[in-house]
View 1 (cartoon, rainbow, N blue to C red):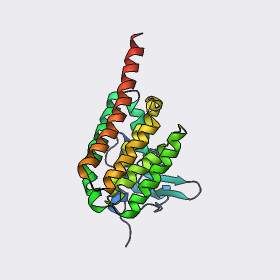
View 2 (cartoon, helix red, strand yellow):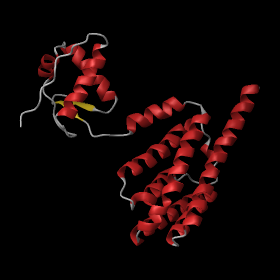
View 3 (cartoon, rainbow, N blue to C red):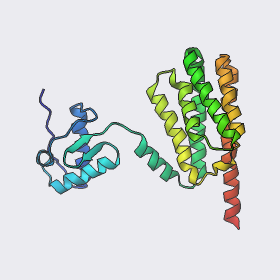
View 4 (cartoon, rainbow, N blue to C red):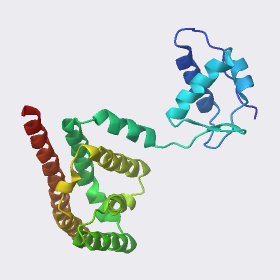
Length: 243
């Protein structure tokens, strides 16, 4: 089936924005999958009725958003969806505003506590075994007073993997990474590694026992610890600002 062509632009203002919108529409209208090679620049510019410079400006903007990918000497490709541009902008947008970080953590807390019940209904022995192995690695790092951020992220992903909900998995990663990308202005050194390990171990115990009330309580307690870290940073920031 031949691909649908793009319609020429009908408005002149903010031409680069119009180019972006037309390129997005072209991708959606034709159901183009990640990895699909777009027509040559000259053909795209002709279809849009714009100069190649205007087209390139629109393409660069979509590259920065993770929609397109340029491969030198090959062409322009549709890029697989990624949360990375969102995460980079989110961390930048948060800046030093600890109130916004608190809001991100509260959303994550509500999401995980609210959905842990389905995990207890569906989780199998293999997932529990992976959670145990992850917790054991956390303990080994904690005993050496080392950070274990990657295992922390993996733990929360494994906790909900059995639900086979890709959107949920991505959201958990977004909220987790948003917090850790903000670590330049949130002093994560305030976190007690052994206490964090114990929190995660207790969550696994409750999940394995299929004890919903305890699992929710343990998850909630875990996020209380994170909230205390943020509160400590807020206090320090306020003190520093008054000196």
